[in-house]
Length: 198
Image 1 (cartoon, helix red, strand yellow):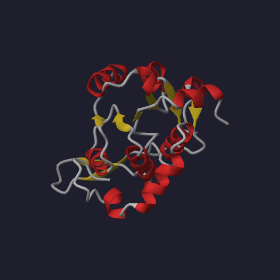
Image 2 (cartoon, one colour):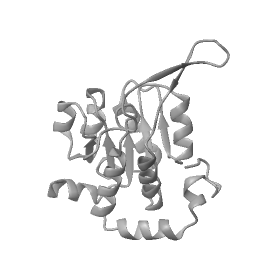
Image 3 (cartoon, one colour):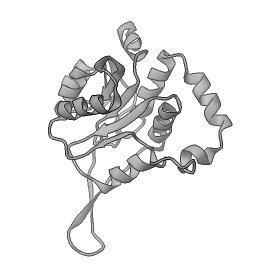
Image 4 (tube, one colour):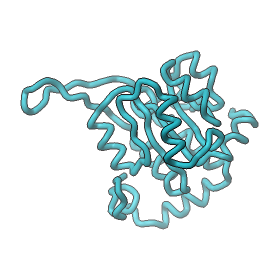
């Protein structure tokens, strides 16, 4: 069960940032031959449950984004579909990217939640007001987290986190009601004309 401290921290969150491999995916990297026969393309699989969770966060007025060391067109496409506000790929120092996002967003550390699964994520987790980890996180990361999701990365961990934050803020039921009342195409296909799609 989340601690009272975690719930208190979640009430202040305006920005949620995710690592990708092992958080939004199960951590498995797939390489397939490129169509032009010039090497390989990295392909990732993402959870539809997490996608709905990130869309719910956006519906609640929260900003979302990813900070990851790897580069992938699969991720770029998924982030566009989900209308994420911040997409940082090829990042070696995640805490520095976090500082850049704070400057761009106007959000403070106490208003930021970061979710990661491995030791490379520890600097950004330690800097965030709410640190989160999927169920399959490395022990050092789970120990640093205020919230550990019931599900593993790529299997609903991001959804768990979003629902936890929205419930802590007392808006979950209202956001779900508004989601159900809105045309599905507005949030699942990006037809509302936003810069990114879901």
